Image (cartoon, rainbow, N blue to C red; front, side, top):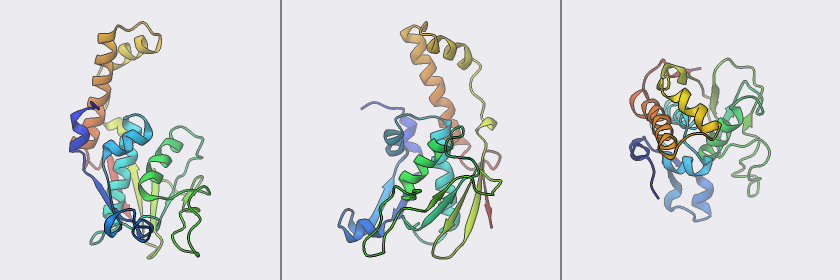
Length: 202
């Protein structure tokens, strides 16, 4: 399986999943997600998918400074409706990593390990998303702005050709390369840039 090499250079996210530990899915309940894992689940790599991954990474780092994030014990809120713009896509990525869902998640074992009712849309917040630890109530707001990293000037004309099915195979390849170069810049060069990704402790 061939893919852009930068996928392997993106920081990984490791969590403790008590349900996986109890059910013997992963030794010690530790799960590590790579950006490549999330791209497989999303079906593509783009500034939205990359941004959702980065938002989760930085938010969990801030919430769990000296310990592993606990999967299934993280609430996530969005100001948009899940049908608005890319909110649903971002929600799916964050759900894959944190386990948080609206109502479709795991219902638990004897009242433990539930994953549902942990994700909310139409929340009264101003940030891109809010992450909250269920055990401590500690929250962080995360602000993500991919516009700080603009696409190549060659992107628009190539996209037009791709969308109208007039692009040659070489042009299609060039478009994909430029597309991923922007994602790489966001995830590997601007991953600590507060103009792109900002965390505010509440």
